Amino acid sequence: MAGANLIYGPGMLESGITFDFAQLVLDNEFAGMIKQTVRGFIVDDESLAVDVIKSVGPSKDFLAQDHTLKHMRDHSRPELIDRSGIEMWRASGATDSYQRALEKTREILQTHQPEPLPEKVQTEMHSIITETEEELGDYGDLLKIVD
Image (cartoon, rainbow, N blue to C red; front, side):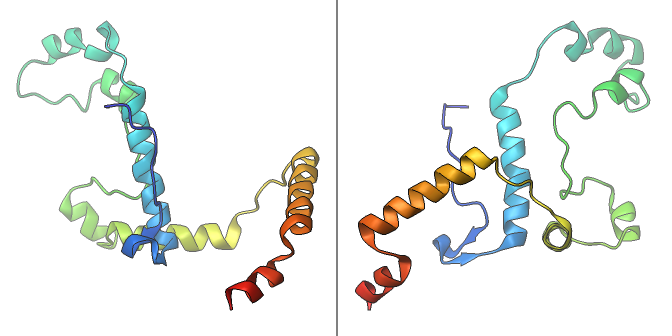
């Protein structure tokens, strides 16, 4: 909220020495929640729900209200963070967030088919690589320098 606009190190552990795909999936969820918070929230009569609060009254059930159902996904839609009660959590396998992220990671790696880059982008990238290799040599030459 102070104006930072950089999220650094998704998937990294041990100061970047280790990379973990499941941690990347978790960090992606966290980053989405942060981005939503930074965008801000609409504050108006509809979002404040003053009329609903007055009609329901104190210490009553707001979950059964149409307004709640209509707006319940406006603020956060975590896929891996489980906010259910302990009995429901146990009944659904009692997995932690990391286990759910690991499962999601495996699903992504097995099924995801990325859209090809537009031809113009591929051509530009190839041009940049070719130009760099001509200027610096190919990757193999760079490895020889390091040795």
